[in-house]
Amino acid sequence: MIWVWVGIAVALVGAGALVPVLAGRDKRLSSNDEAVAARSRYHQLGHYVEDVEHLDDAQAAALMRTARERYHTAGATLARATSEEDFLLAMRVAEEGLSAVSEAYRRIGRTGPRIKKRKRHN
Image 1 (tube, rainbow, N blue to C red):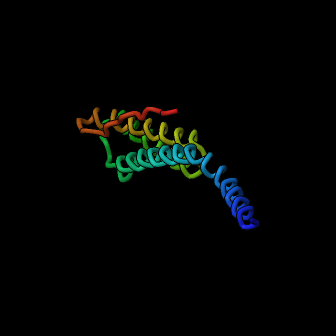
Image 2: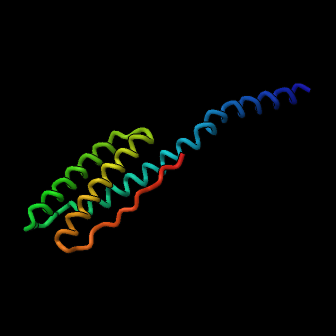
Image 3: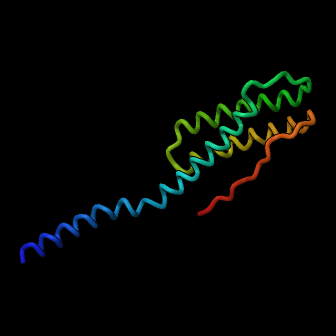
């Protein structure tokens, strides 16, 4: 009979240890999705702003400088990001940079990045 009580006690302790882990699982998965999306946008922006050639169009060059600044800001934000809001901020900053690249490329007659805004799911 004592083994039954020991078995029940072990099951209760095990279930109690799993409750906090399982309760926070959805939140972590959501943050992970946002982290992946933010890093994807950051790397996409990096593709356009690293090793930029000299542009004769002054406004296009200014837009590319703005995009490069957004690239550095998004990178710094990602380096310190710990919450879903931090990752969403980094993604928004990177998307601003991609918008600047898109406009600069349009001005010089090139095809730029296609930007699809992600819908935030609650």
